Amino acid sequence: QLQLVESGGGSGQAGGSLRLSCLASGYTFSMGWFRQAPGKERWGVASIDNDLSTSYADSVKGRFIITIDNTKYTLYLQMISLKPEDTAMYYCAACTEVDCRWWQLRDHEYNYWGKGTQVTVSS
Image (cartoon, rainbow, N blue to C red; front, side, top):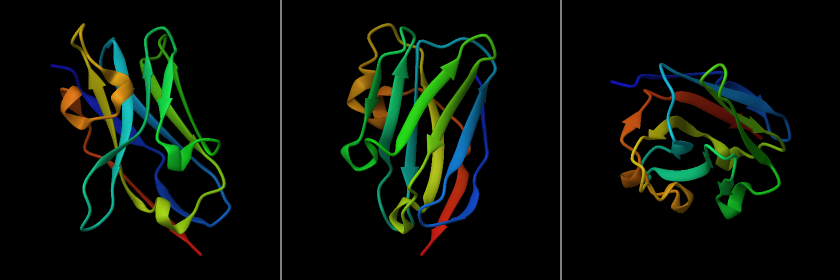
């Protein structure tokens, strides 16, 4: 059973930056970051495959960067130029299926989830 633990969330000012981390208990094919704001659906922010291909939601392109250190089983999300609308609970997810369509940023493609880390951006 793969376990995912997020860290690095917190509060920041608009225009600032934060870096999220997600420690996995083992190797996985693809990983991603999702977020959910209060009263809204969860949606995909960014994802990365084991060949380091990446996919981003349009609203974060140019501001967020997803990376992975496979030697440490750790996923990162570097967030810059933060906006108040980035405020949400951020979840790390992993897809261990060989036919996972990780690039589509759809949560049903991912079969393991962390408990989330809160990010709050004030104006």
